[in-house]
Image (cartoon, rainbow, N blue to C red; front, top):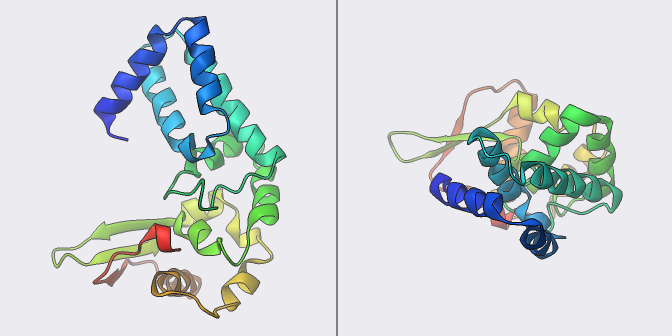
Length: 195
């Protein structure tokens, strides 16, 4: 979400009375596909000096992160997935109880979503030739504790029917394991929705 939109939404939430915030809370309940937007709005509220409803928004965000673990909500399923939507979830648990990260991934990771999970560890750039560069970001990989995910290799070895974007993700990850730290460039962008 663009920064100016975040400011407007943040200001509207700040101006909500208790009843209106309850309506907002019910409307957003279960909308795990909005997790990163909620985190962005909360960040904007905290860093813009707003105090009204900031605690309520923080509680809403905290509850969503806890529900994701308790209910095994798959942030990488089609209904919840967008690139980096899960990032605030990992940040939350890294600050609170990072054991929940690996427990969560062990429950939801599968051969169908492993490419999306890995893609959340990538940094990317575009060079002067308009080629798209990708590499595994070690800090993101460690935050998500993927090196401890025992089923990771098994999921990646099931390469039957994987598409071109999934193949690129797998190859980039395998290059990282072999010590590659530089960006690897492709003419075509990896489409997260096809992972």
